[in-house]
Length: 439
Image 1 (cartoon, one colour):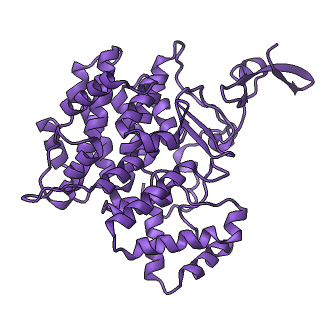
Image 2: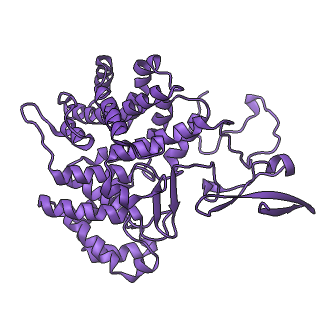
Image 3: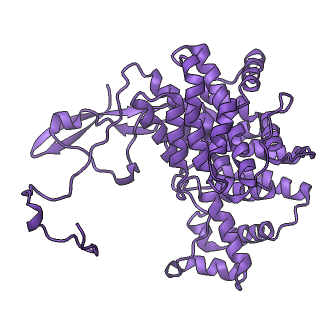
């Protein structure tokens, strides 16, 4: 017998079904609530609202579990490449040898930008934020690729997915080069994904960049650990835009814009800014930690704790090892990274943070890794977007695979004016705070 719950409204009882996921998580199905009762639910920030059923990523925040398509994140981070993880997320299974070779060939074919898109890139001022460039350029890809791609076709979708994954790194590196006034560097067909990106980022005229094994490994792991994270702000944005029938490029471009916010994709930038503040200030790390424990100080310990995880962020465990290995083997000399290790040790030894389970999260270690790789701070969110691209593509596909797809349309509880009479302009009172006198 199916499980249900009862809701009593004005003395009348309504029965609501309970939906159970494959990992045992339970949800009350309220899809008919307004029809049957005239009521809606109010859940500011959607903290307790399931917006969809999804087969892509599973998170158990209390237990510190993250799985892509059922596979634990630590296994994928240590055993799979970013592109293999991308195929898992987008197509549902890990690829075999033939599938992997075919997808890599598609990545190679679609890595360069059309000549006219380079003109579009040149149209941005040198100081344009890389996220603005990335979002606009992804939208611009539609003009060159959509006329030839019917994404309803499986083979064409595979090519479109490869195109986005490949060109997003080319666009990102080109935006960085443009900000420096340097020429764009072309991708190479003989380099793996992470190495190719670093080649395009750091190769200068007459000086080819060859990333170390440790650097490529750390970047690959960074990308794997950012590939998807369930219904976060940017992924929910992609799904909402996709539900309206928008194409893959427009939906992903919207995801880039949502990720741009400092509360979402900008969190790892906050870590470096915090370390810089400690470095530039007069207080020691210990003094900074004490100020962070004082709520009245306004000081926050960036990169610690997580809205979803009430335990250690499973991505942080893996990325910490990569960060330690990178710093040790590359012998990086950077005072901010030295401070990062002091902050980490001090917080993990402090009962205040341990008791509240405020452990270092993925943003703390990703900030350290990107800093060590010499990625500029204004590119940090772009790196996040490159990593999150497989998840966005997978969620776009999942939305468009639903047989009874409906456009997403949240409700609201209106708290504005009641019925108000229209007034002629001469009778209207000036708006509060309005200093202007002209009409």
